[in-house]
Length: 199
Ligand code: SF4
Image (tube, rainbow, N blue to C red; front, side, top):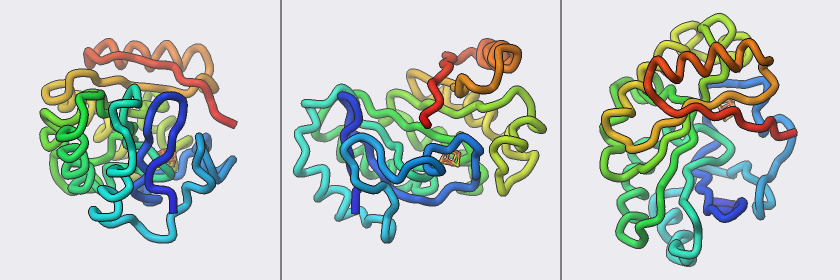
């Protein structure tokens, strides 16, 4: 079972396969593995002890960053992300990043960005679309039309607690959508990134 894997110069953590979305462009639909992982499908969610044991075998200082991002939404395991981040912080000053769909407040039933304060350096949130209707068309969230607004609120709240907040889209959404999404990021006052679609 792959808990951590190397992709580029970063170490990635795969804590869960749960996700409330089912995005058309999700990499999980196209391949079972990324980086040096054989498969990112988990037979079960790794326990705290298993995650720490796995990290103890890694030279964390040798990576450019440590990233919570696997075949699921990392903030489905918010408590574990917080505890594991504390452990990583005790071992290295390398940046900690979370790649998330930004739906943590809905998933966890409460405001959650503040829990990442002082632990996470960068949060990269998938914006995906310029309004709730288009978001639902591509992300098929169990939260329906509520998802888009909740994601933007999480992005806005994250600005108060996390040094770098990035809203991202995939490059397949078309030039007009890319520009509309850029305007949303500007309005919220966060960074914007157009990321390459992974086949
Ligand atoms: S939010 Fe991320 S993990 Fe979940 S379905 Fe969409 S792309 Fe996949």
